[in-house]
Image (cartoon, rainbow, N blue to C red; front, side, top):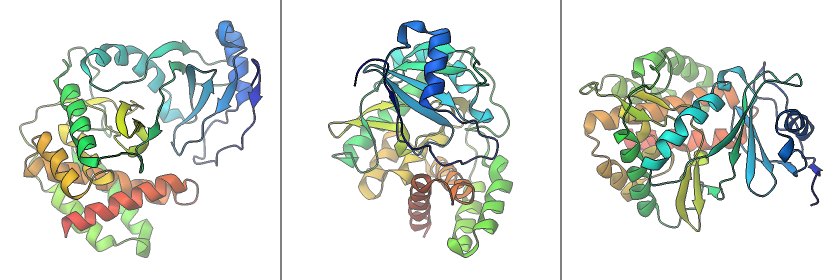
Amino acid sequence: MRPGTLTVMAARPRMHADEVHTDAALVRRLLTRQFQRWADLPVTLVPSYGTDHDIYRLGAHLGVRLPRIGWASGQAVKEAEWLPRLAPHLPLAVPTPVALGEPDEGYPFPWAVHEWLPGENANGTLRDLEEAAVDLAAFITALRAVDTTGAPPRLPGTRGGPLGERDEGVRHAIAELGNRINGAGALRSWEQSLAAPVGDGVTVWVHGDLLPGNLLVVDGRLSAVIDYGGLNIGDPACDLQPAWNLFAGDSRRTFLAELKADDAMRLRGRGWALSQALIALPYYWQTNPGIIAQALHALEQVLTDHD
């Protein structure tokens, strides 16, 4: 592919009523206006089942991330501020921001250019789930240990807060899903998590969105953790979600043991995995089969674990 080439790919399905359309031509215009040094590099839409950004490969070594919905519009600024501070403390790679773009050319949000991270997502690509459980637990442990001085306060409804903040959304989702899921089982599991003790109140850095799609794998082993839109200061149980969306059996036990999760934290973590799956299902049922498959898998694992 020669410099300056635009690769045309089919547009991703529309998932949100008020989302913003992006395409390679828009990326080219934004680069020409704001980062001329990259304006002639090839631009390629990256296939993804992510829900709030469009990602474009920019040449061989860069990627462009454009929010497609207002709730994601602060992520570029958050990552530019905090990822360089967190990265030196973490045992897996994180995105390296290299430029922060401004709204322009009719596009309304801040956007970002990052160094390109190689790898596939963690759906079916890990060579050894117990090895991955140890590696991911080490990442979470290191993230929890980073000093939170100066971190912005957690806003109500964001990741890492009390599960009760999600109660209305969970119950509404169960009712909306009807007989598409085991609603009675989901409600029993949810109420068990809601009743779990809240612990000692210690808050730490949490990634907040440790789904398989946000974990990169190279040569069968975890290599990087991406997408820090949910980065927050909150309950460490929030980052136990991979126990049910990625691991099972021995690897789940290894993951939870490495993170020293007691029974109460385990129940709260399971509640986070359950609530994320349930709330996603009715919203993306018609538009994002990748998210639906991921959420149904997590729901099955939670209900099996509960039983």
